[in-house]
Length: 337
Image (cartoon, rainbow, N blue to C red; front, side, top):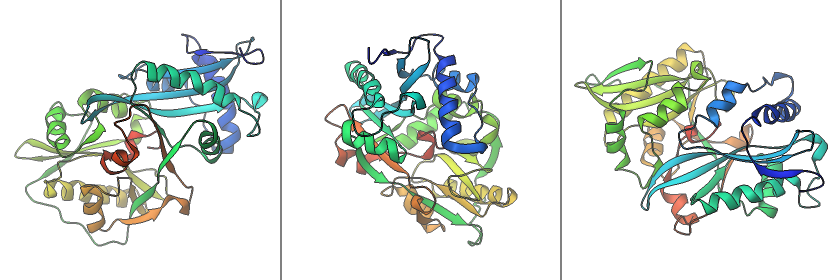
């Protein structure tokens, strides 16, 4: 109990009070363009996540959610087998319960049992993209470690056309293809650490998502065999006037599948009337180098709103050095796409 508040984990039915505080807070932060989060959106993100959920709440006697620290776990394949990474999202404190940075805030008090529970059940890593205020609090009290300031890979509409390999058939599809698990097994062999992009995860992340209409799924096939999958958001991006490559699953050696999917993305960028085509990839990755060779330029997120990728390690084998050089990610690993 903290000043009359009870700090506890989520209980069925809490979602209504969570949404009331969430929408109050983010209306204040985002202004008149903010659209309230709905119950189906919340249920998809937490109750329907195939890897489960992590939610810690500070609840007032009248049922108001005064603070929340929440996370969306994802299954990752690593050198140490399957591990759970927890994407920390939707952290918030009701305006009536804010204390600022002079004392340990309710935000921190709500976080502590969340982290204790996650460590006790074996989660490997917490990560997130905190806003400035949360980053400052996290550095001071929660041992947030900055992994990188995010740069975008951006291709301008004025860049030269891309090749379209004749032996690769590209198609927009309505569903995650049944043979995507075999594609993931091939692509996974190139990587040391990444989210398990199997059909179950991809179906939940993009097809079952209430925001499904924002995403397009594109496949690349050679002789009928699935050689690549791209998730595209033609209508929006973190940079102004941008379309977004939200997710990417192509074996590193298959340059033709890469070219075919990127050509489709550029075409859709043009059809959507977007000046930019953007994505996020680890700067050390083969994919980042290939994209740069095809006209994508490294562009600081700080040109618009700086994004930081932070982490807090729960298992010692996941050193900052390992994560900085071996953790492969896309925007789809976050709530930013």
